[in-house]
Image 1 (tube, rainbow, N blue to C red):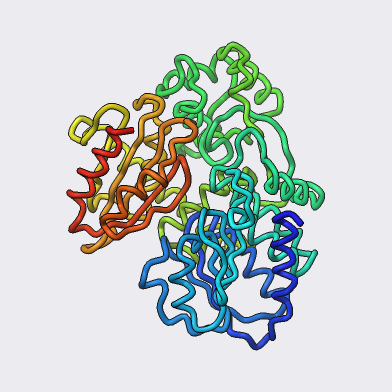
Image 2 (cartoon, rainbow, N blue to C red):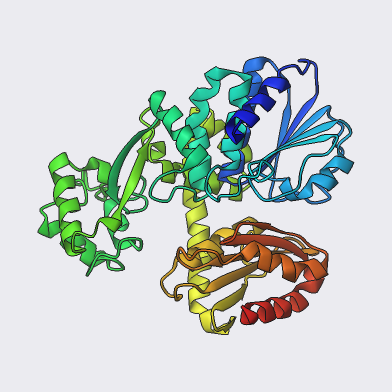
Length: 453
């Protein structure tokens, strides 16, 4: 029996639960956690169960109180809190997670590939674990495979394709015709941003004379006889075109020209996963994942869940949330670049204390964006800190570019343990919550640990 079968068997056994059972869902608040919650909610609704749900940035003492329900689900979190969960729940807990953690207890059923002795990274997300669990409840839940894929993409598990259980989920979605696959240039925001801005801000694919230059982007399109805006009407300001507004021959000219400028380097091509039955802004899986993540970081959990369930009003609001989120990120990144020299840094690391400047939920994504920024050399470890509240400060670690085996969770865990905190995450991305009173001592310890690497 492999892990997918194990998770499905657990879902099948869950169906023996009486419909009158009180159920609570606690999920992580990022794209993966929200996708996991949407999958489980839809599966429970289909079977006639009643439930409540809650999203949290992490499992702390506040999240583990008043758990009087008969069954409490923990989605995309809880793997390293099994003992605390066991003490907190009055009934039974079911943990559906993919992070490293400990085994089940008498009252906590922990369904996790790590516990099942499968430790390869990127094989499955929290949403994927939840998907296989619900597949055991009802085979019709194969229709939810696309949401599980969305969770995997939100967790950065697509790297020139999916592997193992994620690939199995992809095949389910393909059979259901819920997703289609193609190839396109690695241009972020291709369906949501104006084409002019897509080209100007094309950092994943640096286009000579274009990236970073609005005039360069305009000239490129003029040279290709492609109009970047519609004609104005009644004196109104011309509306900028998006990629999908172009004719097929225009798309072909643009793609071929950029490929030529990049020496026909096929590494600038990415797999394109499209949801054919979704509205324009939600068709591209990466952009959809970003929209759900934006909702989570802004605390708009119900909007995200409604969007994932197909509610049109929620989808409208989710798309608007992305604009707000991007503006906030832009302000934070601009600040860091302007103040770069004032932050603590050394050989192979930089520590950025953002204090109250950003929402604590955005500390991790800012670290990720900075780590991908080519201002920093490959392999540098970027650490960001942000004030959670007067008592707590959030810490995130990321490694720049796609460097393997930095074991950041292990490193951060070693640093925070003396301060009574735990680190979560993966080898190339880790986070923790420390007491604000310990911040200066923590930074000193982190500096020593990073310099010793």
